[in-house]
Image (tube, rainbow, N blue to C red):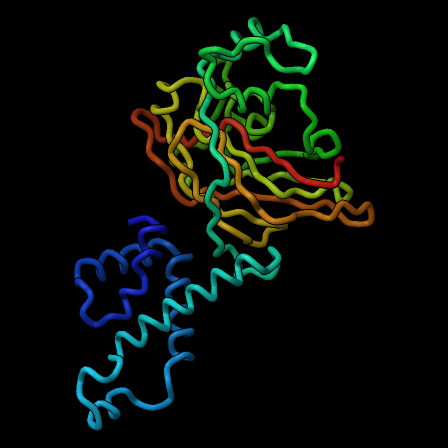
Length: 309
C-alpha cells in the first residue's frame, strides 16, 4: 500500500465494519510512514471535535435504528470533512504555515526523455531558424528536456544560482565515472548523483545566497535517464522529503518514469541581500528498486522561479 492508496481509504478506518485485511494493511503502512500516521491522527482529532455532544447510543433508545447515524458512520463523515478542511488549508496556506513535511506534492508536469541522444542533439540541431526553433524535429519525440538543459531560452538561471550542492553520501568513483552531489546540478543528464546502497535517509542539500531569486518549482530527472536499460538497472526515488533551512515543508511523490517531473513548491527564499544564506534539502524516503543495482540515482535536480525577468 502506498500513501495515495492509504489516503483514499483512510476514512474507512472509522467504520467498525471495515474489512480486517484492509485495516491490517493500513496499520502496516502507518507503522512505516510517519506522514500517513500523523494524517490519520489529525483526522481522529478532528472527528472527535466534530462529534456531537449527545450520545448517538443513548438517542437510539428513543428512535428506531434506521433513524439515526451510527457512531462509526459519524466518525467517517467527520473524518472525511476533516480531510477536506485539511486539503483546503494546504491550498491556501503559505509554505511556512503548513504542517511540517506533511503536504504531499505530485508532479505538475511530466516530459518524456527525447528519442535522440545528446550527441545527436548537438549534431543535428545546430541549425535554427530565425525564431530559434529547430527546423525539423521529426521523430525526435518530446524535446522539452533537452531544451530545458541545453537550449538557449531565458530561465530562472538568468539571475538565480546555486552556491553549493552537497550530499550526505555518494557512491565512490568507478573508473572515469563519478557520482558526487554536483552531478545532480551540472545540467548534463548523462552524469548522476548516486547513493551508496539503497539510499533511504540519504539527502542532497542546495545552498543559496539571501539575495538569490526565489524558487517556485523543483525539476527532477529521476534515475539514470541516459538510456532505458541503465534506467531500469538502477533504483529511482519514489518519495523525497523537502526541507527549507532544515525544517520539513513537503514530500515530493515521484512517478516511476524516465521523465522530467516538475513540482510546484510555493515560493521559497528571500531575494533580499540583507538575509543570510538559506538551504533546500531533499531526503530520500522510499525508492523504486532497480533490476540490477541497489544504488539510487538522480540525474538532475534543479529549479525555476521568479524575481528574474
